[in-house]
Image (cartoon, rainbow, N blue to C red; front, side, top):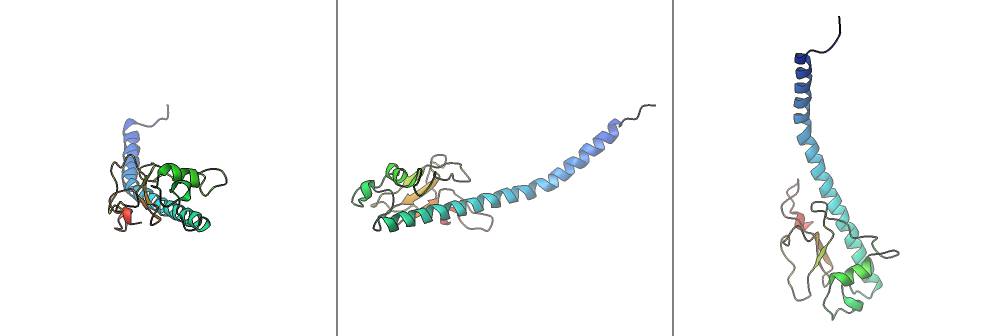
Length: 152
């Protein structure tokens, strides 16, 4: 006589695995969300520290101004050239953990800093204003604690 599992036994095992997965999946998604929130806060800390160090070493001029002249219009190209590269302040611009974007939207000196995420979301990962050395996460909505992502 051959020993094997019956179809009913296999179906019962599959059903039990399905129930366990349905119970565990929402809990795992909560951890994924909290991990993204922590990564966003840490990336902002790194960016803010790099901006402050750059400004301290360049007579208070924040990165983003071409040739370190605050009379010129700030640009992302100047920010990248000043901040990113070997033996510079950042090895690379971190990706926004929610969108995966590394592009920084630079706000000019005469423009008001936005009060919410800048559209299109699939283009900008960060929003930065050199005049105030303010950098924010470009993502709408609130985190698991009810804090607006843009206010991180």
